[in-house]
Image 1 (cartoon, rainbow, N blue to C red):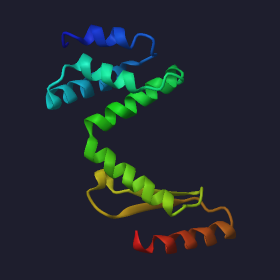
Image 2 (image 1 turned 30 degrees about the horizontal axis):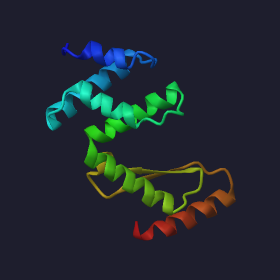
Image 3 (image 1 turned 90 degrees about the horizontal axis):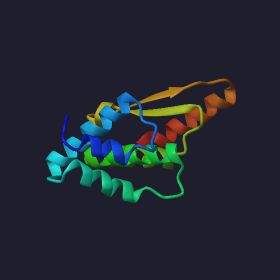
Image 4 (image 1 turned 180 degrees about the vertical axis):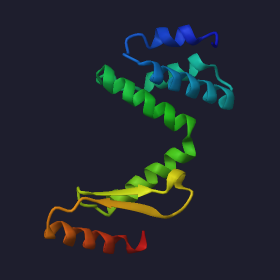
Length: 134
């Protein structure tokens, strides 16, 4: 294990973190450290400073994981954010999921819908028409 793993565990001691999450955090911190030339503790401290103080512990952990993921995968995170904003602007019905091609390697999308009524079918058709220039 890396030398500052214990320091990282100490910094996050108030968080309830399972083994899989620890592994993900440590790997992503290490990757960011290698790319940015900062040590893992420094990267973590910068992320922890960004967490809103009014968040509860699960909220802080979720925020930390999301920020670390965005830091580790900036281009993918931006593509995902842009995609989600584009879909949200189309106002899909609640029963419709728009799923991007894996890692946005293609411009195609998958549409999943659970139709329970004729009205759902009409809403789906209207939504698909709004997607014409997606």
